[in-house]
Length: 174
Image 1 (spheres, rainbow, N blue to C red):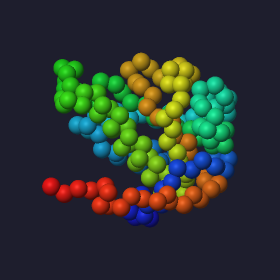
Image 2: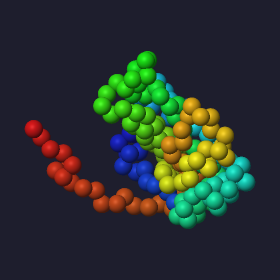
Image 3: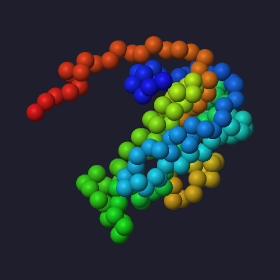
Image 4: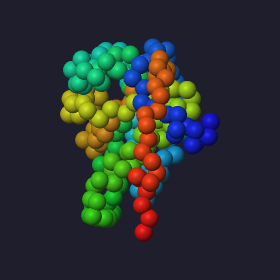
């Protein structure tokens, strides 16, 4: 599968088969670009049914908890704080301040999802959850921050691409 096809075919999957998956997609996602090659993104693969149940039942809204109840693996995407977008003295490198951290994590999440798609896996990136409680449950150290949750599994659905805006609506020339 080439990159263009992978991007065009990747969808957010919300129905999964319970079949086991391996972790090789992390090795591909590790090649994501990052600010000054800081490589701040870290992943926690959650497969323990009791932890998945706790996150689904107590720390996510219903529409996300229904997804989590189906998947064999949930990935908590975290990042090391204070590196991306910062100079060695701790000052910000640009007016964007610490927002580069989320930019780098976003690129890493997309790389992760495309690597999963190439292997036939489905994913959906979730951003609405109780960050504090999940961080506590997963014992995420204070120097890291939870950025997103990614459901990963074998798709049990094949949604079609939603209508896309015309390039003329997205691109302007100067």
